[in-house]
View: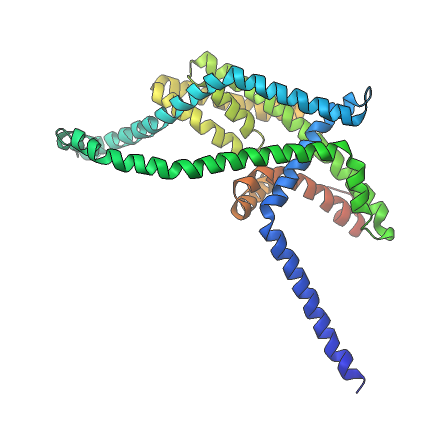
Length: 356
């Protein structure tokens, strides 16, 4: 009689615990984009910590944070006024030339294939058929094209507004985090059992130092890679070199994948100019990334936490498959944090081994 209630209560409690964990994981999955944006806010706070810590030696920390935000806003505004017309013109050129470059590459492949088989290419066959039908076809497709443009305009505008709002919220979150970092650390520490508080303090310190070194190194690497790309493309005569250098600057934040993705628009733009510019663009991008691999990485990132290329590519693939583009962006700093925690909590403390 006495054992039956206890025997029935135990599976009931286990079921409730499992349901609670399932609800937690479901909530985390539904809020995955918000959590990733929050992690980006942490990265922004780490970036802000460099000038804020330096300025707080001579002024209150709150004033230092406001000054950094004002300077950042002023720099972005000035850069927008100075570079916006040039960037807008280059974006339009790139949008016009990218399809032309792809079409030229496809026609070249068709000509090579036709020369080897002795057949007529699609472009040659189409020239005889499109003579009298070109103007009539364009006139018939004009209303349809306008309708498609109007259908895509509203979602595109909503996406732009949502993106700008997310950027502003991430910057504001980073400002709050860098203003009183100890307040949030103490809040998290209050939920840790007293027996594990020292372990939490050490893990917090190690993750903070490692993330700070990585962010500092990657910002320097991004600046150098953007500058090298701008100089190389400008000397090679590639039109739109400023926009392409900005893409390289942003792409350097995502190792390997970002470097390849940021080089594709430059190569296509050069191909649309001429085959000579195409070859020069390839030489420039190869040279820039050789400098990155053999000069920038060893000198700039040598003090940062290193993640092996295979692990990095695997983590980027998993994060991209699960969370999309935003997951790819935050994959590397998340792997840095995970590597530090695994080495300290599991290898050093649990297994009592020296870190690799």
